[in-house]
Length: 148
Image 1 (tube, rainbow, N blue to C red):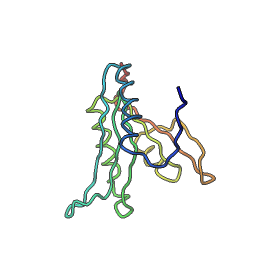
Image 2 (image 1 turned 90 degrees about the horizontal axis):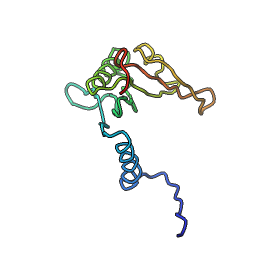
Image 3 (image 1 turned 120 degrees about the horizontal axis):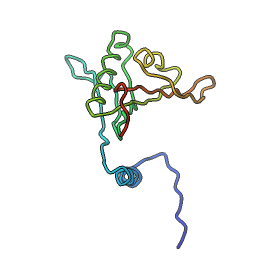
Image 4 (image 1 turned 30 degrees about the horizontal axis):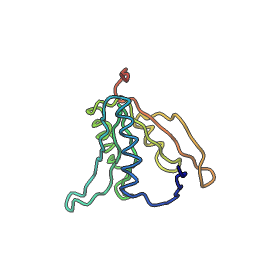
Protein backbone atom coordinates (compact mmCIF):
# COMPACT_ATOMS: atom_id res chain seq x y z
CA UNK A 1 0.00 0.00 0.00
CA UNK A 2 1.35 3.42 -0.94
CA UNK A 3 1.95 5.99 1.76
CA UNK A 4 -0.60 8.80 1.97
CA UNK A 5 0.42 12.19 0.64
CA UNK A 6 0.64 15.01 3.15
CA UNK A 7 -1.00 18.31 2.21
CA UNK A 8 -0.38 21.60 4.02
CA UNK A 9 -2.95 24.35 3.36
CA UNK A 10 -4.37 27.50 4.86
CA UNK A 11 -7.83 26.76 3.47
CA UNK A 12 -10.20 24.54 5.44
CA UNK A 13 -13.07 23.20 3.36
CA UNK A 14 -16.36 21.71 4.49
CA UNK A 15 -15.06 18.29 3.37
CA UNK A 16 -11.99 18.68 5.58
CA UNK A 17 -14.11 19.75 8.53
CA UNK A 18 -16.44 16.77 8.06
CA UNK A 19 -13.57 14.27 7.73
CA UNK A 20 -11.52 15.52 10.68
CA UNK A 21 -14.09 17.17 12.95
CA UNK A 22 -16.75 14.59 12.16
CA UNK A 23 -14.29 11.74 12.69
CA UNK A 24 -13.18 13.10 16.04
CA UNK A 25 -16.78 13.77 17.10
CA UNK A 26 -17.75 10.18 16.19
CA UNK A 27 -14.81 8.81 18.17
CA UNK A 28 -15.69 10.94 21.22
CA UNK A 29 -19.35 9.91 21.00
CA UNK A 30 -18.39 6.24 20.89
CA UNK A 31 -16.05 6.52 23.89
CA UNK A 32 -18.32 8.70 26.07
CA UNK A 33 -21.66 7.23 25.02
CA UNK A 34 -23.27 10.56 24.24
CA UNK A 35 -23.07 13.55 21.93
CA UNK A 36 -23.90 16.85 23.56
CA UNK A 37 -21.90 19.41 21.57
CA UNK A 38 -24.01 22.45 20.74
CA UNK A 39 -22.87 25.79 19.28
CA UNK A 40 -23.69 28.95 21.24
CA UNK A 41 -23.83 32.62 20.29
CA UNK A 42 -24.89 35.54 22.48
CA UNK A 43 -25.28 38.72 20.45
CA UNK A 44 -25.81 42.40 21.15
CA UNK A 45 -27.74 44.10 18.37
CA UNK A 46 -28.29 47.78 17.63
CA UNK A 47 -31.84 48.65 18.75
CA UNK A 48 -32.94 50.28 15.50
CA UNK A 49 -30.94 48.46 12.81
CA UNK A 50 -30.41 45.01 14.38
CA UNK A 51 -26.75 45.29 13.32
CA UNK A 52 -24.52 43.12 15.48
CA UNK A 53 -22.39 45.37 17.69
CA UNK A 54 -20.76 42.58 19.67
CA UNK A 55 -21.13 39.22 21.23
CA UNK A 56 -19.70 35.88 22.21
CA UNK A 57 -19.38 32.66 20.22
CA UNK A 58 -18.54 29.24 21.57
CA UNK A 59 -19.97 25.83 22.28
CA UNK A 60 -20.81 23.34 24.98
CA UNK A 61 -19.50 19.79 25.02
CA UNK A 62 -18.99 17.05 27.62
CA UNK A 63 -20.03 19.30 30.50
CA UNK A 64 -17.73 22.18 29.53
CA UNK A 65 -18.60 25.57 28.09
CA UNK A 66 -16.04 26.90 25.60
CA UNK A 67 -15.85 30.66 24.97
CA UNK A 68 -14.08 30.87 21.61
CA UNK A 69 -14.61 34.47 20.48
CA UNK A 70 -15.75 37.62 22.30
CA UNK A 71 -15.84 41.10 20.79
CA UNK A 72 -17.64 44.40 21.37
CA UNK A 73 -17.11 47.44 19.15
CA UNK A 74 -15.04 50.14 20.91
CA UNK A 75 -17.93 52.62 21.03
CA UNK A 76 -20.01 50.15 23.08
CA UNK A 77 -17.40 49.23 25.69
CA UNK A 78 -17.18 50.26 29.36
CA UNK A 79 -20.94 50.49 29.89
CA UNK A 80 -21.60 46.98 31.23
CA UNK A 81 -22.55 45.39 27.90
CA UNK A 82 -19.62 42.97 28.03
CA UNK A 83 -20.57 41.73 31.47
CA UNK A 84 -24.19 41.34 30.37
CA UNK A 85 -23.15 39.24 27.35
CA UNK A 86 -20.71 37.16 29.41
CA UNK A 87 -23.30 36.45 32.10
CA UNK A 88 -25.87 35.40 29.48
CA UNK A 89 -23.26 33.10 27.90
CA UNK A 90 -22.41 31.53 31.28
CA UNK A 91 -26.08 31.19 32.22
CA UNK A 92 -26.84 29.32 29.00
CA UNK A 93 -23.92 27.02 29.80
CA UNK A 94 -25.43 26.31 33.21
CA UNK A 95 -28.82 25.66 31.61
CA UNK A 96 -27.10 23.12 29.32
CA UNK A 97 -25.62 21.35 32.35
CA UNK A 98 -22.05 22.64 32.00
CA UNK A 99 -20.13 22.59 35.28
CA UNK A 100 -17.13 24.67 34.12
CA UNK A 101 -16.15 27.07 31.36
CA UNK A 102 -12.84 27.66 29.61
CA UNK A 103 -11.36 30.34 27.34
CA UNK A 104 -8.10 31.86 26.26
CA UNK A 105 -7.40 35.52 25.76
CA UNK A 106 -4.29 37.47 24.84
CA UNK A 107 -2.46 39.59 27.41
CA UNK A 108 -3.38 42.82 25.56
CA UNK A 109 -7.04 41.85 25.23
CA UNK A 110 -9.23 41.30 28.28
CA UNK A 111 -7.73 39.13 31.06
CA UNK A 112 -8.68 41.76 33.64
CA UNK A 113 -12.28 41.81 32.41
CA UNK A 114 -12.59 38.05 32.78
CA UNK A 115 -10.90 38.09 36.21
CA UNK A 116 -13.37 40.75 37.42
CA UNK A 117 -16.14 38.38 36.32
CA UNK A 118 -14.84 35.44 38.35
CA UNK A 119 -12.60 33.68 35.84
CA UNK A 120 -9.34 32.17 37.13
CA UNK A 121 -6.05 32.04 35.23
CA UNK A 122 -4.70 28.48 34.93
CA UNK A 123 -1.99 28.88 32.33
CA UNK A 124 0.00 31.30 30.23
CA UNK A 125 2.15 30.77 27.14
CA UNK A 126 4.36 33.49 25.61
CA UNK A 127 3.58 34.38 22.01
CA UNK A 128 4.38 37.06 19.46
CA UNK A 129 4.88 39.95 19.44
CA UNK A 130 7.57 39.89 22.12
CA UNK A 131 6.12 40.52 25.57
CA UNK A 132 2.63 39.16 24.89
CA UNK A 133 1.12 35.85 25.94
CA UNK A 134 -1.93 33.66 25.60
CA UNK A 135 -3.71 33.44 28.94
CA UNK A 136 -5.89 30.43 29.65
CA UNK A 137 -8.77 30.91 32.09
CA UNK A 138 -11.59 28.87 33.56
CA UNK A 139 -14.65 29.41 35.69
CA UNK A 140 -16.70 27.00 37.78
CA UNK A 141 -20.32 27.39 36.69
CA UNK A 142 -21.97 25.16 39.31
CA UNK A 143 -20.53 25.43 42.81
CA UNK A 144 -19.40 22.09 44.17
CA UNK A 145 -20.50 20.21 41.04
CA UNK A 146 -18.44 17.39 39.63
CA UNK A 147 -18.40 15.81 36.25
CA UNK A 148 -20.00 12.35 36.03
